[in-house]
Every structure is written in structure tokens, then in C-alpha cells.
Amino acid sequence: MNAVKMLTKRDIEKYECQRLAPYAMKSGQTQGRLHKEKEHAYRTVYQRDKDRIIYSTAFRRLEYKTQVFVNHEGDYYRTRLTHTIEVAQIARTIARVLRLNEDLVEAIALAHDLGHTPFGHAGEDALAELMKNHGGFDHNTHGLRVVDVLEKRSPLFPGLNLSHEIRRGIIRHATPFDKKRQSGFCIQGPHLLEIQVVDIADEVAYDNHDLDDGLKSGFLSEDDLSGVPMWSEAERRLKKNYKNLSQEIKRSEIIRFLINAQVTDIVENTLKSLERSKIRTLEDLDSIKKNIVGFSRTMNSKRRLLKTVLEEKLYKHYRVVRMTDKAARFLKILFRLYVDNPEQLPPQAFERIKKYGKETAICDYIAGMTDRYALDQYKKFFEPYERV
Image 1 (tube, one colour):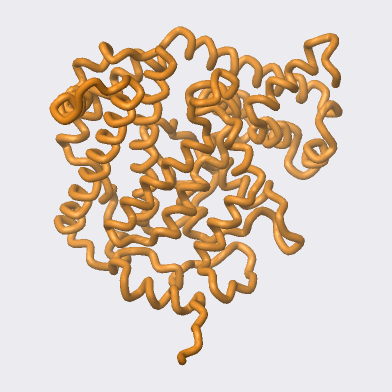
Image 2 (cartoon, rainbow, N blue to C red; image 1 turned 135 degrees about the horizontal axis):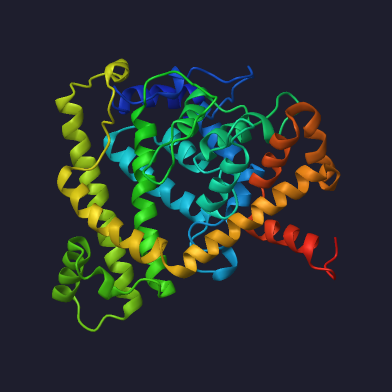
């Protein structure tokens, strides 16, 4: 009887070379970590990175950070954490079909929002304004700072000591939702297909879960979507196959249809782009200046109409605008209070002032807050009977 053989890190790396596409990023080809350390016997570099991200404080805090709706608005709305999980699921599906490195894709997806502030993009805009004369702020650059400096998980090095490719995925993450701001970080290397997959999976997740949450909240109605071909097509198919569906099941089936249609389009269009661009190896990506992973023109046109409805009916809904404006005001007031009297900071945040400067230390502290914690801090400053 043959003895059971353990699957080692080398076995997995060998499997990757045999089964992944030639233009995929193999874990055995990593450019390594910031701080040298002994690798694991049966986990690849990207598998370890994924585990480190999941166990980080910043990852857990995503559970109470805003996506569109502030956390206390309702338990069933998406948060940064559930959004991140959905991005990872969609990205893994695309990577698997394209024979890219799923472990790398999943790790980047799980890390892509670690630098987000409380209260979503409103919080980011507030900190960007406050920090414009102190080095600036954007969530990608801060995400890299989180994993390189702010997380404390080892006596051997600061941060999580993630691999070069994960760090590149964090800093180069880009979608239409992200405002391009000046970054002091530059991580050289080809724009890996795995990074591109996470970027586009983020778009798919964003649009469809915002649509779902918008309908649940009542800020969006199905009448608002009647002129959107993607919605109408899904609705026609459902009516043809099912009768008397509840609104909840109907909505769930339409969202599922929309995600599947977009993911299918991404895969088919990307395969055509790879062929047109004559991408045969990882090195071929060095000379390509545009994204290979993407939607077809037809799908982009369909999505544009959906995004217009989301922008006009959901993101500009008076309650969403009021909520985000209020959130930005909270953070600006907290920031200025700490600047005027930094002794009010907790010891760990206060100690960073000597090393990083007052504004940067305060920005780090506020960016790491959850929505709930930021509101609690505000109440401690201004509610006379609130315990401090």
C-alpha cells in the first residue's frame, strides 16, 4: 500500500507551471517580500498572503465600514466586508476560467479595500481635503501603508510583509469609482492580468450590489429601471420561465442574471483581446499599455445606462447625499479636534506623532475607524452625558 504523500509548496508551484496559462503569474516567480523570511513548507507565497490579510485588524474592521448605506441603516445592506467577499468570489470565477492564478487574485481582492475610511468615499474625500498640504490621502496608498507599516502582527517586521505582487495590486487598483490622486508610492512591474481581473470584478460587484441594496431600501424602484435594456431583458426571461414570483426572488434572479451576463462577457472579450494583442507569455504584458481584461463595447454600452440610473436615482438620492455629507462633516470635526489637542488621542495613535508627524498620525487613526467607532468618538466629544 502506498504511503500518503503530503502536497508541498513545491508541488503546488509545479502544478501552477503545468496548468496555469503561460501569461499567468506563478507563485514561484514572485519578486518576494519587503523583509526576507523563511517560506512555508506547504503553502505558497500568495496563499500565505491571503491568510495574513484575513487575520489582519484592518480586514475585520471592514465589517463596520460603509459601502453606500451607513452600517446602522440596516443589517441587510452591504458593508465593505461583504463587498470585498463578493469581489473575491467574482474575481476567482474569472481567474479560474482564464487559467490565471486564483490564489493571487483572491489575495488582491481581499486586500483591495483595506485602506478605505469610515463612511466610504465621503470619508476618503474628507481626509483628502484635510491632508492636501500634508502628503495627500487616497485609499489605495493608505491600503499599502496599512499592510506595510500600520498592521502589527510579527516581532520580525512591521506590517504584514506581503509579496510584491499583492502590494502592486493594492496600489494599482483602479475603477471608475476611484478618484485619481497623487501617490507617493511607485511599484514597478507589468500590469498583471490578475490585478486587472480584481479591478473589473470590483466594478461588477459594485454595480450589482448597489442595485440590489438600492431596490431593498426603496431609494430605487423597478420603474426607474424600465428603460435599462439589461434589466428589461432579464425581466422578460424570468416572465417566460416563471409565473407569480415574489418580488424578493424576482430581484435575486435578475441580479444573478446580470452578474452572470457581465462575467461571461468579460471572459469572452478578454480571450479575444489576448489573441488580438498576441499575449503568449507573462513578459508580453510589459509592452501592453492598455487593459486586456475588460468588457466588450456592447456590454459597456448596456452598463452605461444602468450606471446612469444608479448615479441619478441612488447616489444622488437626497437621503444618501445627506448621509454622506453628514459623515464627511463628522470626520473633519474629529480631525480638527485632534490637531488642536493631540493629547486626546489614545496612546498608540499619539506615539506615532513623533515618527510620522501630527497630521499623518491623526489621519492614520481616523482612516482606521469603523463607522460606529467614529460616531462614538464624536458623541464622546459633544454629548455631555456620554462617558469619555
